[in-house]
Each structure stands twice: as C-alpha cells, then as structure tokens.
Amino acid sequence: MSFGLGVSPDQRAAEARVDEEMHGLVTQLTNQITFHMRERGITRADLAARMGVSPGRVSQILGGGENLTLRTLAALASALDARFDFELSSLKVDDAFTSRETAGTEAAANQHSFPRAEHHEKARRSGIPRRR
Image (cartoon, rainbow, N blue to C red):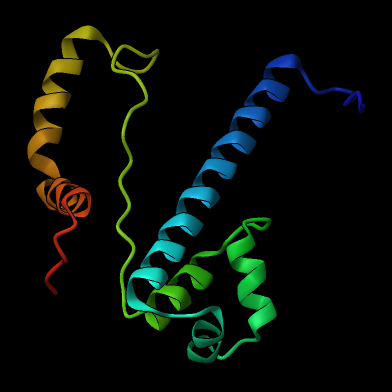
C-alpha cells in the first residue's frame, strides 16, 4: 500500500473514480468491437491485417489492459468500416453542478439535442442495421 505524501483523501477518491470510469469505458469499447467483429465474421487476424499491425497488437488492444488513444480508435473504426458514436450523459440530474430549476430545462433540451444518438441507441437495441 502506498501513502501518497501530499495527496489528499479527496484527490485519491477522485483518482479512484477516474480509474473506475476508465475501466468501464475500455470494457464497453472492447465489448462493442468484439460484438461488431463477431456479427461480421471478422477474426482478430483479419482485423490485424486491415490495421497493418500484428495479431498480438490486436490482442493487446482487445484485451482491455491499456489506454486506447483516439488514433487507435480511429484505426479500429477504419479497419472495421464502422464509426464510433459517443454520448456524454449525466449520472444524476440533481448533482452539485445542476440546480433543480435548470435540470428540467436541460433535460428537455437534451431530448432534442441528440436525436441521432438516441436513434442509434434504439436501433442498436432492436438489432436494426444502421444506414450509412
């Protein structure tokens, strides 16, 4: 166990939350990539050839043990002839940064701000293939 000198308990808690979020993001991304590959019959060797990297490198990427860069994600998307869609959403409505008065207004605005992301999520859940 390491005792970080000069690091407050709040800073350690924030770092722990970041690490947890990072792990969740990597897991979600690698699961989505693996699912996409399985649906289309693409092997890790196929993906490696398309990306111009070794099969071992693809295993590292899909193993989830590393911080994926935007460049790596772009290379994956290009090799899979796909696109990543990202959505940032609040974990809770009444947090320290949102008042009750603005929460309703923001929620209403957000319903109309990203209809494409909502449409893609509904299509993904229903199994309907996306149109390009």
